[in-house]
Length: 82
Image (cartoon, rainbow, N blue to C red):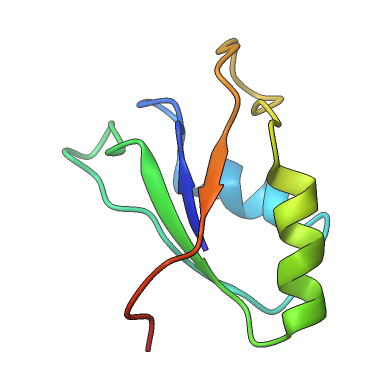
């Protein structure tokens, strides 16, 4: 799953903490432009279809509770995931 509209100063740990409220076995890749800024998207990988559906429902139109951004997160299927 690709998650977009992540605020630039959001840390990977913030995303991990949020995802951990739903899932315990996942991989998160969050590209950064520098040590302090993310590129605004991340890739989330889980190995259970049911869990992916739960995460999709969880993230749909949600804002990050640790940030003041009112922009909702957007989710998309990720292509070419290995």
